[in-house]
Image (tube, rainbow, N blue to C red; front, side):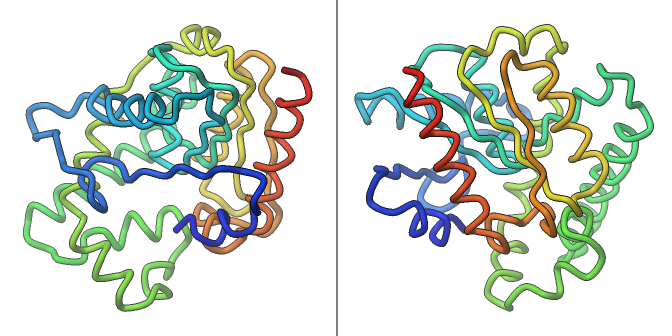
Length: 239
C-alpha cells in the first residue's frame, strides 16, 4: 500500500516500514481474550529502537491509532507524527459526538456478527464504510482475496481500537509535532476524529486532501508524499 508514497518521497528519506500484528510477516500476538493495543506498540517500539535514531512516525487508519498509542506510551524518540485518517473512535464519545460514535460502533458490531455467522464477504461493509458504497468491488481480485483472508486479524484490530480509550486530556501529553490528514470525502466519523485530535494534541495541524477518501494512500500518493515531506522538513528546520 505504501510503495507509491515511498517512491515519491525520494532518496532524501530512509523509509523503514513494518506490518502490524497478523499482517505480512508480522506474527499475530493477540487473541480474542487479549486485544490490548500494547501488543502493537511493542512491535513499533522494537522497530524504532533498531533504527537507533529519532524517527518521523507515519501511520494510516488503525496504523495511525497505533502511532498515537506509541507516542502516548513515550518510550521511544519520535521527532514527529503524520497521522492519516487515524481511527481512535472512542474520542467521539469523549468529545460529545455520540451520534457519530454510535454510527461507528453499530457498523463494526454488525461486521463482527456477519463474520461470525459465516459470511465470507463480511469485510465488504467495512471497506464501503471507509471508501463509500461500492468501494470493495472496485478493488482487484487479489486485494479482495487478501481482505477476506485477513478479516480475522481486522476484527482483532477493531477490538484493540475499542479497548484504546483515553480521555481527551491525555493527548495533551503528546509532544511530537503532529500532522492530522483527512480526506474530503471520508465518512463523517473519520473527519470528526481528525478535528478532535487536532484540538487535543498541542501544536498539531489539520489538512484535508481534496477529492480523497479513506484510501488516499493508494488513490492520492502524490498528495500524501508531499504532505509528509513538507511536515518533516518543517520539523527538521525547527530541531
